[in-house]
Image (cartoon, rainbow, N blue to C red; front, top):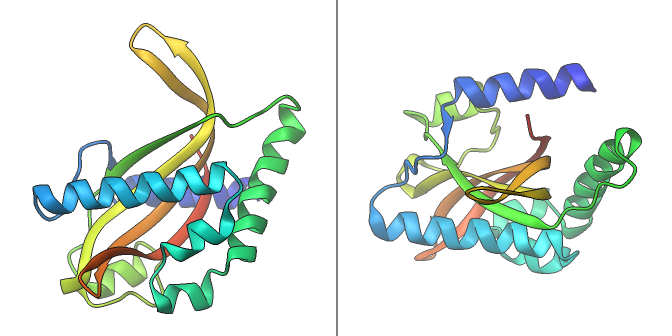
Length: 168
């Protein structure tokens, strides 16, 4: 499992993860930030049905509320094997670079059912974890990174793909 996580984290790095938004314009950055934060907040609060409601109709078929719960809780359980007192208390939204086309989304980013490129808004992450105070404010020090493909669906931002991975 650790090897898979390392490979996926390497893929995330290759795919251009950064804290700088790469979404399509200011209005999309705000929309992507909002839905990413809402998804992370819902998962942190254990409101898996609420998180599920933020997905596209197509994504809801693949990523059920039960799947979201199971994946998140499994990652928390794995963290607690090494850190029994782990308790997530913070969500931070971030962004990576979108790929050039649907083929790259499928082959490099690992999104098998990528929606059409013209619907993409952002490749985002909702980092959910335990925070510590730093001189610049609270910062997540251990947790789970939720990778999200944010798209325009019916004129509104929705999530078309979800992955849960350990933060590096």
